[in-house]
Image 1 (cartoon, rainbow, N blue to C red):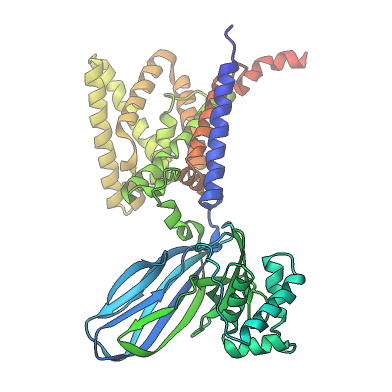
Image 2: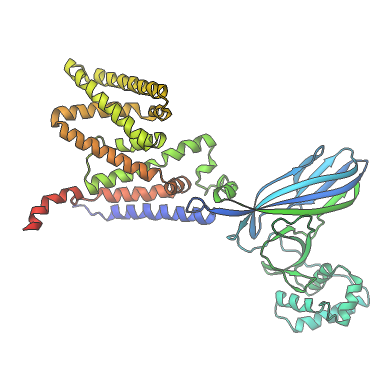
Length: 503
């Protein structure tokens, strides 16, 4: 006998590949393994208020990007009468409004939706800032040098240096040098960055927004972003402590202005936010529809094709049920995979309506087919007559159902007419050759398998898994191949050994 090792290697490869694709999709694209999972989405509105002086106006607002803790889902803006463009400046995005002429009080709105994303790694968002040695005038230069020497002795790296430096500016413990330097630079965050640059440490001032559900008209807060190689931490220069990263959105991160305004004055930017719970698949929709080569997603297809595949991808589940029932249990069916197609029809019609419709059409068809057998027609003509007969019966049952007010009966049109015709033909021939008992045996087996396949295919969890994880198809294929190598007894054949067991 030929070795089965290559066969088992193939089965293992299919199973492992399918499992790897499923896990990769769950981890990389955050597709939930179960339906009904919800994710947190923040909607943040930025309101820009200013007074236009009657000339052309150009307003440029810094906008956030995907970052550790958050993935940007969608952004838009409301700007009646203004032109709007999303542009790049210093490799960071900005929203830019323009108008030829405006006067008086102006209001512009920018809205962004962000998904809470715990899987995002903590990495730099913008390029590491260059170290710019500050220029001091005396006596500030001497004070800065002495402060730098003192802090360096009590630190080991950039982060510990920053912590020790911020202690020098604690409100209740200002050193003489720190107090003097604050007179030269009132903005404490900018002063800390200058002192860090003097110690050859990369740092910048970034604008952060603390997300709290239902908060309105919040300003942007300044934080010091300190780098140690590619790693970075945020510090609050006002409190002297490391910033709490939980629910903290970095809005502006290039040490540039939050708002650039030409043609206006007295500008003000405030933020409002609200927290929402959305189904996970809706929240990660942007990821699922991406054109990434590694994104094997049905959601990247047009909606029409998605709807088509939603049903097609259930068929392998029905096939697996048929293989289990025929190979392991030993049930006989009329046709190999006819139960799967009947189960697909049950999904469209509902189980009870489908069962009644199937029994009515097949039962009536067998009666009419018994008459056709007496005419000694050729096979092609006989099958064609049965197809026409099935169509007429379905039409008749639909009209009668509608007349008596049973709208469910109209769904009988979802049955595959060609399959029904072949089923009637096969059962009729089987009746003539094997008798009514065999017809009932195979017909009942077909209906039982169809019902089991329907229950498996019409499950919300199964629908979710098959539609969102294409790797599952490879897993099903490996199981089908493995079942195909089974050569033992079927469960229904064990009654043969009942008498032996009693002895």
